[in-house]
Length: 270
Image (cartoon, rainbow, N blue to C red; front, side, top):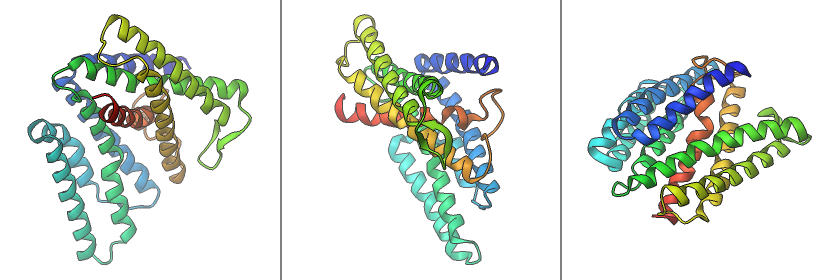
């Protein structure tokens, strides 16, 4: 636990600083995390006996920030479409290559790189009103962290019913519910402070809903990452962060919470 705190607190502070810095600094951190996360996913897939083409995902994770900076979201969509087309054409021209490996290659273009893109999109969700981006990023970071902590605590104290024993045997329904409740309550408190002292552009009632949605999607992201690791019979994606594992072990829930926050704010707030 002490090792987790010693690593987790600096990581949380780094992400908090990047939220306020945004711009090139956030892009630089996202690029590093995306490349490392993409490499970890490929390592796990290869350990699971797949043979994905690794260069498209690594290239996409390395270039998605500059592509977005110069060409916007359309540039990302075109780049993704081109890379997918190359992978499909490659599978046709190489009949000995297993079709399943092509599907896995396309899957690894989506996960995790596209979910890192949602953090980038969230940071630029309202260029004319940067405080909205700061609040959105703050909610996307805070919610899964709170949900993870309270899901663990509630699971240890009250957990009896297994949530998904084939994927993550230690997770319980009671823990998941506790995490969702905590995320909703903490985001409500976060929203109260934001509206009172920092930014009034988002009505307060959106924050509990963001907490519930981001908490739920964060837990989904955690389960998806656990399923991938279980499929490859490995405990962690890596060991770059002592006590936490790899980049994806720390970012799995944050990526899905960022997607949820961006979609919700795009549809119901902006």
